[in-house]
Image (cartoon, rainbow, N blue to C red; front, side):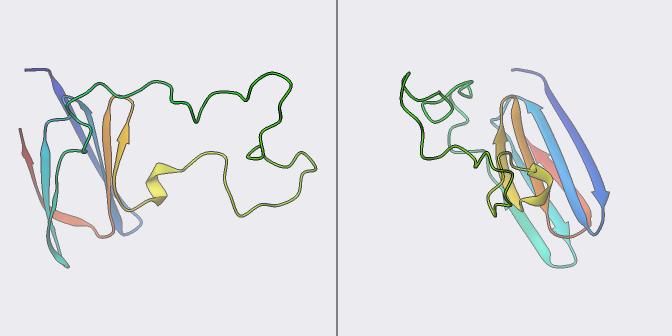
Length: 111
């Protein structure tokens, strides 16, 4: 079995749990709102992809319609996702992050 690191931080009324290593794990949390089970990411059996076709540059000479505006104008779309602002489970390159919307009173980590 691969080693697993589990870190938890409660701040601003929410809980962030960071799991690195073996992704074949589940986390059960209990808070004032009840119990919630976070199952392994759907793709846990394969290694996380370091690059995807969506991260690649357009073919030379072509411009992508998805490039951010270069005129400095405001946009409702962000270039990067602040994982701590997204509730639920998000895969990372070396594990996953869980953001639970309440302070957790009990955590169970299952392997």
